[in-house]
Length: 240
Image (cartoon, rainbow, N blue to C red; front, side, top):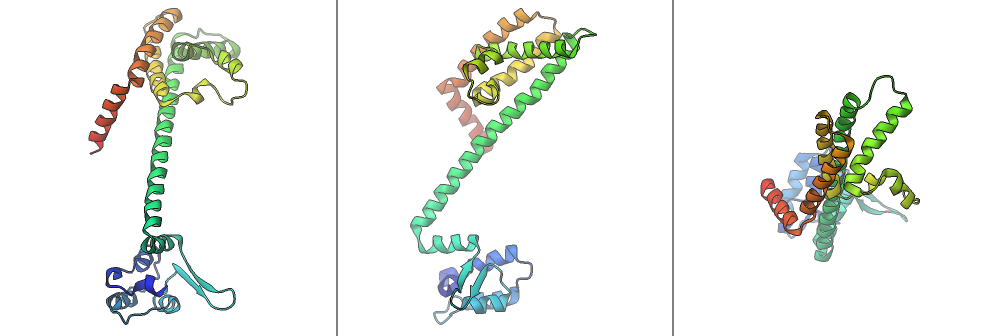
């Protein structure tokens, strides 16, 4: 570990010392600075035990005896491995990028799914205020909500929730849980539009026809290769 802690001029910053400064409030900075000043000298040698005792470091653990050894916190171990192996460093960078891409994909899906849920609340409130007469039983109310949900399902997926369950007996959840991002974006728009159409007093049949035409148009746009490329480019430029 002596070479890792610092025996070359290029490692003057002592990465494990930087880690201690960030994570260890009891780290002795004065002693650390003394080691850092000597790190570029060819004669400089520092054992893990001396490093720990002198600076009160916690990132390294050194034990003597039959089952002893020197162990490092994973952050320091990764830095050490990256220093001695270019292949490991490139693998680490590649894996980090892969995980971030997966995280962004998952985040994007969750945002669209939550947006659909929020808009569904707006949608059901419009149903409650405009379509449900007084003195209905809970069963009747639930039937109206289910019926209106299927207006959206039929418009976008071409089937009711029950028809989907009958066709997919082994799948958990509902048809919307298996929707892709484009479908969820379209569904979010349809929910808002259906609420607007309800407020305008359109019949269910009229709304179903309108929403279906809108769904077809929007899905063509959302799944068109050129449109997707243009949208990605726009988002990229906005991020910059």
